[in-house]
Structures are given as structure tokens and as C-alpha cells.
Length: 108
Length: 120
Image 1 (cartoon, chains in turn brown, blue):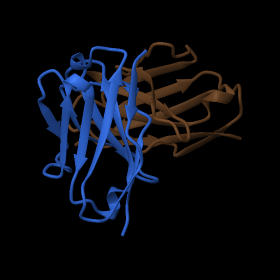
Image 2 (cartoon, rainbow over the protein chains, first blue to last red):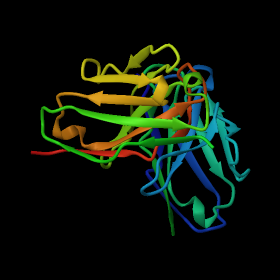
Image 3 (spheres, one colour):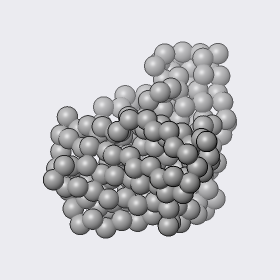
Image 4 (tube, chains in turn green, purple):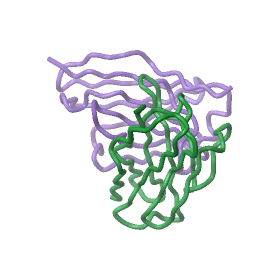
């Protein structure tokens, strides 16, 4: 199965700063079938990005995804207070679908 | 609006089984696959399997093969996940999630989660 490794584990930033999150796959992700989710405490994950770079419905344009093959990035251009959360990547190109271990974006 | 509403928290003894339900509303139930994903304390999200509600075909993660059964009741627009031979390591929040299609893909809507605690 494809193992996804996210880095860093925790990102300490201030509102207004730029956040760059990484997701590296143990083998190439088929057709760049990679998604990003945001999860806040006590809530289920929320879809942000699919197909590596397409924003889901209703997601602000400060969220962007990029990458291909084995290296993917989620960028939040200017952090808003509601963006402090845990972010997970998911590959859905190969079975079993797998998730990264998450990156926590916390307020500095 | 699309909603997935799951059944309530469960406490089970080791060796028992648990069955969690996921009632869908706001869309045509048979047109979108339903997946089950769990999240153990401090662990990453873990995909367990999916069902095509229209045809009833399923696919399971090899890790859970033989212990998990996913079914559906189309008349009730409800999917079910049953996990047997529970161990303490199965203590987790179990989520159902809607696929964007009938084939395995990414998930656009999630249930609120069901906490399953396995303890003697």
C-alpha cells in the first residue's frame, strides 16, 4: 500500500502568515489522485482539495494544492483564525486508499 | 442539503461485535458510494471499506477482511458497518463518508462520527 508522510508534524504560525504543508508518497500516486482535508477538534474531516490542485466547492481561494507523482503541497496563502486545524492528505488512486498522519497548524 | 447521520456511541467488550449505521438524506442514495473510515486516538485516518449502494457490491481493506461487513438498506437510505471480534485497539471514532461517485474516489460529505469503545 502507498504510505503518505506529511511534514512538518506541527506548524506554528501567526494569522496572516503563509503555511506550506508537504505530503510525500512512498510510490507515485496514480493520476495525481490526491486530496487534502481539514479537521477541527470534535468534527469530521472537511474536503479542501481533490485531484491534487482542484478546490472543492465553497473552499476559499487562499487554499491551493500543487504537486504530482510523489510530492504534493498544500498552501494557505494567508492564515485566517479559522484555519488553525489539522490537515490530512489522502491518496485515492490505489487500493487501499491511505491517509497521511496529519499536520497540525497551530497559533504561534 | 446532503446529510449523513450516524448512530450513537457504543461500548463493547472484547470479542463482541458492533454495528454502526449511517442514514443518508438530501441526495439519491444509490448514486454515490459510501465508505467507512476510522480514527483511533492519536492515529491517522484509516480506510476500512466501501459499498456501492445501488448494486450492493463491496470492497474491504485487507487489514479488516473477515472482520468487517458493510451492508445497506436502500429503502431506508442507510448504510451499515459491522465489525466483529473487537479488540481494545478497535477503540476509535468510526465515520461514514460519501464518495463523489459510485467508484472509489475522494469524499465530499462525512457523518458526524460514532465513538466505539472496546473495554472489559
